[in-house]
Length: 120
Image (cartoon, rainbow, N blue to C red; front, side, top):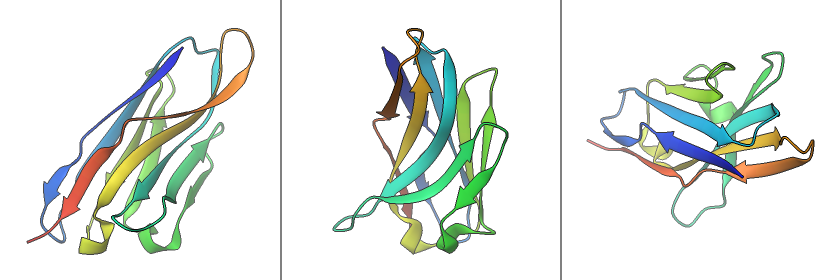
């Protein structure tokens, strides 16, 4: 079994910064990709950023230049540094990972979500 545990959400003023972390643990052979999604009230869950093996990254246009995704392969942890936060960034942020387990089978996993609120 694999678990994703997120941390780092909270309340921040517009223009402020937060850093989210997501640590994967359990029966892991290889992490193929990790990413962050978010879901605001009344809206569909959307992709925020992803990072794959080799370090290639992808961002939704609305966060380009403000958010940075990174990964620590030793700690099996993905980070999302969020700068210049705006009220429209308010959402529950979910960690996602595509993982090959010790039985060499690949599955997609989700974290429990962490609330990010941007408000003055």
